[in-house]
Image (cartoon, rainbow, N blue to C red; front, side, top):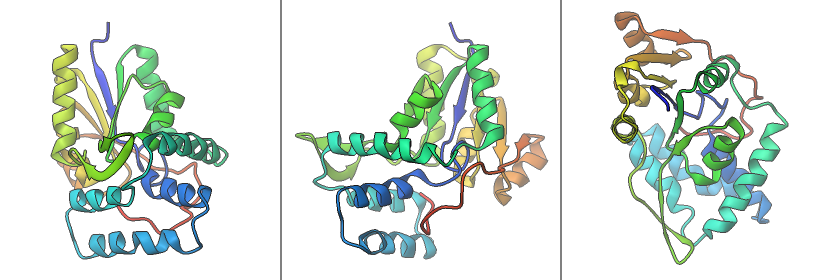
Length: 231
């Protein structure tokens, strides 16, 4: 039985890019969308992020792009997408090595991301993660409505860690968490062993003040194929 958990953000913590946008580009091409569709659909997201809209709102806007899509078709696209991405060695070495070490040690390994099942399920399966929590699209009759339950961003990540600890009777003071962005701060603060991946200025400042561990974000993957927006 696990006595501790290790919580991992996914995008730019374990994977060297933003999964939601790479998946969207792949999915649109796979279903034969016209050239320029990706750029047209994501233009408003880029503008909203540049204008300073909250990440949770940008996240909600992203999922509106899937209104009417089949959940089964998205899951199939996700599996094909991840197989495609594996050819480029997408995982960031240092935090991925930590993930493997936690798993070998018998810790409960938990992915916590603003991404969704199409991206997270194949990643979790590949890594051997015990649980994967992402933003949950609302599905009715097998189709996405374009709405989500709650964007798994910011404080929602911290609440997820507390919920997992309660369900598994774990002491968060003995748990670890890994994140790369200021929006992961609540997740990192929720555990006794926070680890900052990369050089986000907000997280770096907290790490320096509190003595948190830091890991490099040396990328195994190639540069993103498209301009991408934080979600």
